[in-house]
Image (cartoon, rainbow, N blue to C red):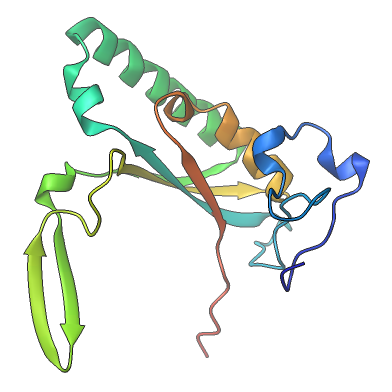
Length: 160
């Protein structure tokens, strides 16, 4: 099992769905390594929400308004519950610039780093007790219906 991971007990797995199961290790489930906790002993997580920009752009005005309203209502509910630290929507991936340095030479390319069907569309900084709670929060977000949400624990940086 990877360093920093442990098997979850049946109690730990309560409320998780099959996406939390580790497919590479029979019977194993994802579990966050020790990460940064705030003063309330809650972990901080970064949610990277992906979506198909072409699909989003093809929605009718009514569908787009309904989706945006659902997202805003979810953001407000997360804020009121104390989970939401910050959220930022990104401009289209066509506005991205990728920077590389190879052999001391800087090269730039327009657009996202990788050509994929789904693009990174929104970032959320979330507080949750543990990975299980973070997964439950992510699974209830409207963005999860349009694409995956990657959940990552935020590492504490020693800034002394």
